[in-house]
Amino acid sequence: PLVRNLFRELYFKTKQGREGDTQWRYDAIILEPFIIPLEIKSPTENERINPNAVRQAIENLITIEARYALAKNPISGVVGFKYPNKRSDVEYLYKDAKESFNMRIFIVSILVLFYLNLKKLEDKFIPPDIYYLIENTVGLIDDYAIKEFWINYLKRRDELKALGEMSKYFPFRGNIPQEHFHLNFQSKLKEEVDFFLKIYQEIKGSK
Image 1 (cartoon, rainbow, N blue to C red):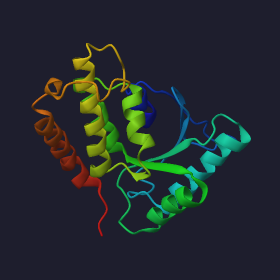
Image 2: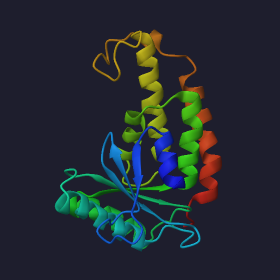
Image 3: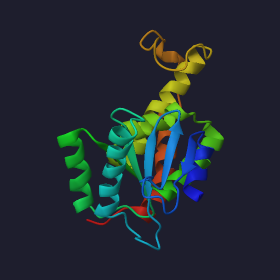
């Protein structure tokens, strides 16, 4: 319920799995505005996300696409507490799944979900912003993924302001004079990434 509620606070329609129902393979599922099955691992079960969680996420993808035809080429998520150690079997699994079968698995710590909820209150994310982060991440939502997210988000926000919020995304990109962009873009980006790094230190894997 906690993970479900954190996604709901990010404006995703999310439902919990049915306990004891083997037909419902996933622990939770995002239903709107896009389909993403979620495998959830409690820290009492495994403190670090392990290969079995990724295998179950792959099963969830197959179930969503083949058995129920809910989405075509969907993304699957794993939610846990701490990230796996670097160069672990987890890394090989999600990379092999992407390279061999174009299966996209994103892995997120519950502390990162708390972080996104906290920042949403100030920066007012909408679902396409978070989906950009998920869609462009294979594997861990880490400091690199978050930096790319903030670059995209801050540019979009500046462009919207320059356009008087006439457009939600980028159809006029390249036509906006550079002077419209905020002068504090780089300082804002550094501030957000530095803030995230304090959280990331608690959950990242060792070498």
